[in-house]
Length: 235
Image 1 (cartoon, helix red, strand yellow):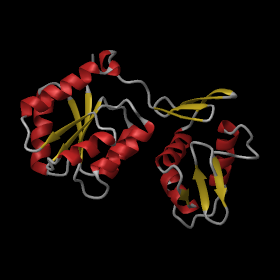
Image 2 (cartoon, helix red, strand yellow; image 1 turned 90 degrees about the horizontal axis):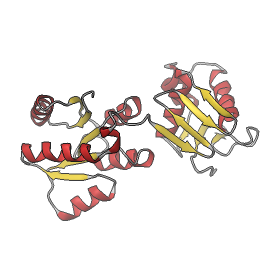
Image 3 (cartoon, rainbow, N blue to C red; image 1 turned 90 degrees about the vertical axis):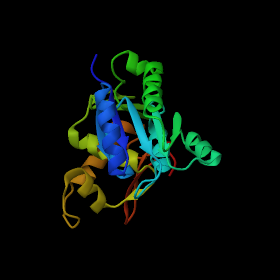
Image 4 (cartoon, rainbow, N blue to C red; image 1 turned 120 degrees about the vertical axis):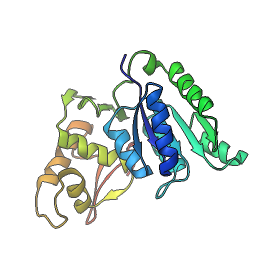
């Protein structure tokens, strides 16, 4: 069995170094980032077995990170770390979707035992790895890791650029994304680039995933502003 892969989100260097060292000594593979934004990017890129998430982070908070992950992945085990010990903070953390909560300073032995317990109870750890990252909307099921999609028209293979576009829409569901934002996020193009590539990709997304591509319910054109994705098919 491969080593369980943990994502540690902690902005205090001293704490992070200590946790990484002890987790690796205990047989885990650890990826460490310092911000919630980095964590969300990586969660979409890789399959992790467990997330260790500090609440107080620069930029978006650990609570927001947990809430965003839970919108798309109800199974990833999440343990929150915080310097705040108030009961209401703990309740809020668990309410956003965390599976466990530890207040700093905490016992390293207890921390390791809780992680092992969470992994032991998770079906995807016992079977040697979590299932590929999937996202469902309408009649579609998309596996971003395997770059495959099951649609009403059958199963299709997705290109890397198609996956990037879908990942961008999924992460910012409900937001209107400008042409400049999409060109930069998917193709790395300058904002003022004149190209029909984006429009052609939107046509392709509708052909793949809309019941009626001529009357889309998920991939919307916002006239004069850009495009918006909605999971529930609301405009």
